[in-house]
Image (tube, rainbow, N blue to C red; front, side, top):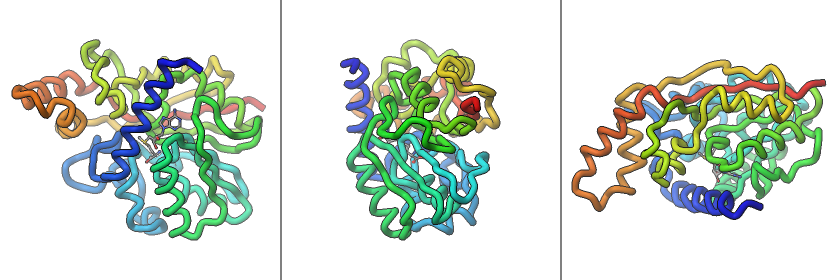
Length: 279
Ligand SMILES: C[S@@+](CC[C@H](N)C(=O)[O-])C[C@H]1O[C@@H](n2cnc3c(N)ncnc32)[C@H](O)[C@@H]1O
């Protein structure tokens, strides 16, 4: 195990344990207009949200709705990488029905505890959450029909391992459908700010690098199905939330946040990415 990568994961895990304890704090999902619920912006319909416990949409850190693009059917096995508090787990559980299975993997104890509370509240008997890393999935080879993930792979310091693990656990012909943050030409100075890494910006890579990583792992037909482009106001709200704490002690904070937001605008967005394991 690479020590530096593990340090980054530890920092990410500490950060998300704090965020779930204060769900109004910022997550990847804080990329949203100041008005309007995050889950709606991320592409979840009111009908879908009505099927899960009220509290769960508020503890989502989603940057899209991968299930909106997945043709998950009854009896399928769905694996969610970095399942967080479990919104996508519960939505998938309804799609696969009692003959299917949904497995979440997350490394953060507080997230797993929250997901288990939500699973119990929803009385979903076909969902389990396993503690583990998305770079070393605690899942058997060739055992799942779908790999979904929502705003997580950008956080991995070892993305090539994640893509290889996806290819390993999918059944032949199985599908990867993830929502994630993409970035292009981020200013180098921003890449060194830890708060921007845990906030899903500094670890994000370009669509080209993402699709090439998937192809190297043996996944085929890789493509972007849809994008959610953030406007300047959304980025500014996000930068304020993500950086506010990091720079709270400095006097020139607001000026810096505005200039960071300007630099980020047009350079980060959310994409739904598709790939398949060959038959
Ligand atoms: C931005 S949140 C997204 C949570 C959830 N997918 C959602 O849409 O609300 C990132 C989640 O991924 C988990 N995570 C990040 N990196 C991970 C890794 N390398 N292995 C396992 N879990 C990871 C974190 O613990 C956290 O729960």
